[in-house]
Length: 225
Image 1 (spheres, rainbow, N blue to C red):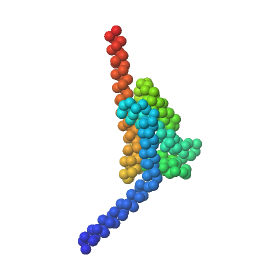
Image 2: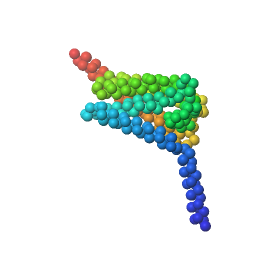
Image 3: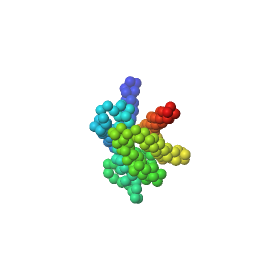
Image 4: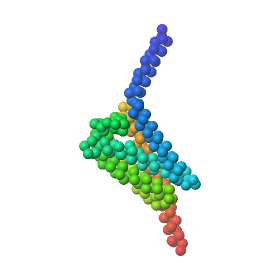
């Protein structure tokens, strides 16, 4: 009797857990994440196709990131910008990409109502950072060392954009952020934003090191003459 009751209780608990999972992780969630994976795959193919074979692993991964970054800005964020300008907003829009952004806006409510601060940042991101990513990727194909300056510019802009996206909400107690479940908190709010902090920081430090060492080397040569 006791064992039967325990098993029944566990079964009920499992059904409740699976039901909750279904409500949180929907088909829209799946398609959105698969879209991100497809963009990453496209960036990988681009690196294999466009970069010279003897490109270093570091440069190859940098190129993949820049291509991935550009495609995310143009496709995902570009669609949000379309749905959030000229009187439009995600919450009243229809279509697959609108549904995707409704999913994200369940984690950060501002993305559903065309928050003016977020719109302002996304205009710069889509129209500024996106083309800059492609320009730097082109410089990498041409092996132009001037790319290191633009990598620092791009990384600074993306770090500033991330800060200005969340800091205003943090200062008033984060009323627009929904951290009630693992998908919204760890996937949408943390992972999907932290990668735009960690990777730009790594690229910034690397490019600073290249520029600094090059300038110091040139200085030593000048002094030795």
